[in-house]
Length: 208
Image (cartoon, rainbow, N blue to C red; front, side, top):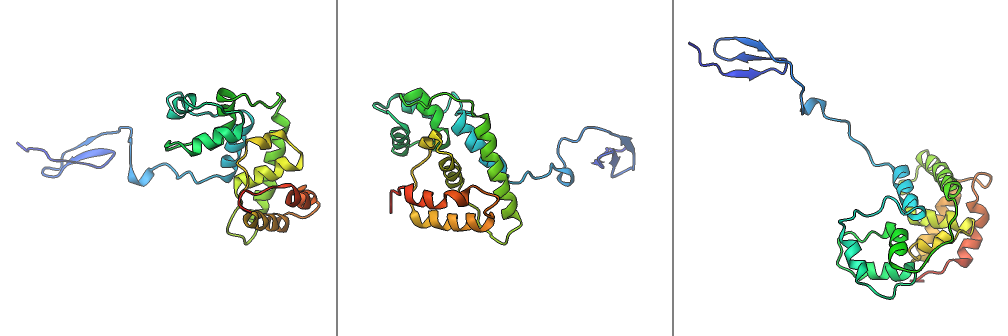
């Protein structure tokens, strides 16, 4: 009598000694040759997530995240800069700078008057998509800082939500992004050309 040693052929099993086979149709939970497609990095999704957090506070850190306990021990936080400074001085692995709005709502007295942000959200995505589409067909390899883009879009319409952004630190980097911005987008397509000189005059840099 054969002591079967079966080999799995996915649709059946076959004994390597006597050749006996049995059909085996089962759901394959993992297969090197049929693994899920790789989900590539999406700049549009990343930008949308950043403005979602800034305009609405969502998605916010999990209830179990240590950032909540840490900020609850901090005192005298009156504005986004105070909350950001507290996070910067902490030993937290994830400082949640993108979630500064909801953290300010919970741990400071700073508030922006309520407004329907759907139009603002659509405006920012529309400008980003125009820029991103133009960049995709250009020869430029490096993209912009998302925070820089958000600042430009908000500055163009004098939005109070700019208060939630990290203060700019480098005029050199700012000028480099601005040159690329104006090169990618024709004057007729983007409000940025209209406000570029205004931005250069009004933005103050921490490091010159």
